Length: 265
Ligand code: IPD
Ligand code: CA
Image (cartoon, rainbow, N blue to C red):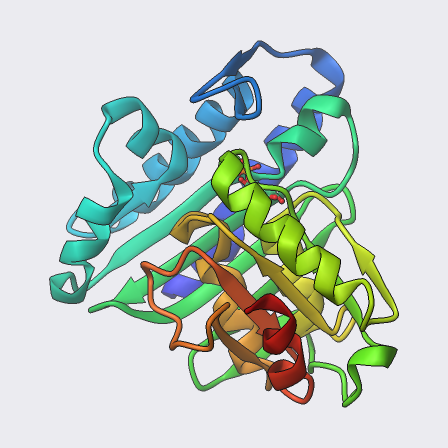
């Protein structure tokens, strides 16, 4: 089984487990603030994914959202070392926890593999829609086995852009600023509740662009590779190159990237 096949199988197993728990009830707690929630299912999903990956590849490193939070180790510390690490798995066990808590479909499992700091594969699974997105560096992007491409739209005025609302207030204000500018320039805006799903939708041509401030590597790494492999562009919101440390991210079909970024600066 290749790395990609392993990630696909584990994402589907975790997604099925999460989907089942939606109907059976679960405990929820607040993390850094009332705006930042986690459930026992997030933790169970991360244990399942971590166990599945490290059982197959015991020498690989693993960065998961919940593990980093619980252990108190900062993401910056993990990512500082990433350029030296042959295999680093970057995982969000549920991206869109607020959707999950509210019983709104559209939460995802996001799994990426970085080799010496470079993204090699990305898998995003939406268990409610049974949509499995994946990409491998240099090999294209796919949805349930079919190749996907970004949209051809070249005008911001004919673009549908997505964003999200981060838990940290400073980042939320930044989003609000971009929102104010973009609302006057693009067709409309969506906020579907999962950064990974937004990025996957840009890759599939369903959205023309997505940006958000204050994200973490686990929210975006898999989706970034999906967009790149589907022919799109991902930078930070200032136009700088995307790295694993990027927190303010902008991804688009590439054709609208410049006017899109102008609204965010
Ligand atoms: C969140 C989702 C959401 C975004 C938040 C993220 P989480 O991730 O991606 O769409 O707006 O900023 O924190 O907490 O559900 O994994
Ligand atoms: Ca999460």
